[in-house]
Image (cartoon, rainbow, N blue to C red; front, side, top):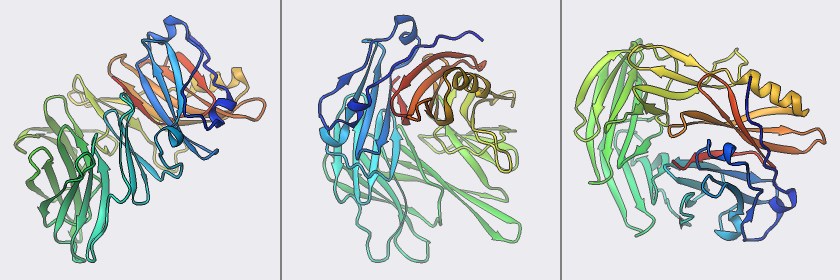
Length: 371
């Protein structure tokens, strides 16, 4: 197997520094960097800091920043929600929305205060706005979406209606999509699908489906969304009108969470394997038209990389598909021969060929492609 192997090593001293200045890593050979997309990733350091690594193909450099010092972001982040170029970082009732392309940060110290009878179901974000789905009664019969614009501090409530415990929403292009599956009685399934237009701050209604459940959805390429059901079918909806555009058969073997990518009528996603299988997740492609799945087994190449460098504890931390380069970027962590924890980002083709490997001192979490 042919591949380019270039190493980008950042000083451990630099990573542990409390300086608020950016430190530029070594410049990589042009043939390596030109084949990569711009990307950024976060790492939650054991030194009490949120670190951001930024790779810029135009300057062929990697830069690492301490966001705890430069942006005042808490080192005790509990979860991250990605939306486009923005990483929403949540710590208790605090949130920071960091644009990883422009470096702009908006934040709120008390972005959500539950009322006496309110029960929060989920919270996600767009580039500058936080969305929370909640019930305003203990009967779970009246669902609303609370919208908090962190630029203006304006709070808007969008009524949705009678829907119970939902799957976490996904946001894209001024639309929230979420659903609920429930068993009405023994063997009788029912699902409800909700579209919310956040541009006009209105729910487009609730679609009810009897005798089937939703297995997930993914945003398409034409202002549409594909919704997959447990009866081996899918329906494609128009996001603007909530109208069904077409239906088809599906043999998609996994549940989707809405964050996957559709390109050229194919879905690019992470293939997880249920227990008792012990296989690590792998990149995969599903052709909507032919119903064929292609699983990209990157394990042999990663194992060879670890063996050649005497690494142990190699673990995949991120898997992302790049439309621009038609390739996969896989973040990983490992322990080197001296017992030091490190990491990197490896680029793979759709044929599982390892093309480029970039090593960094810390491993990536929440990698964002800046395409």
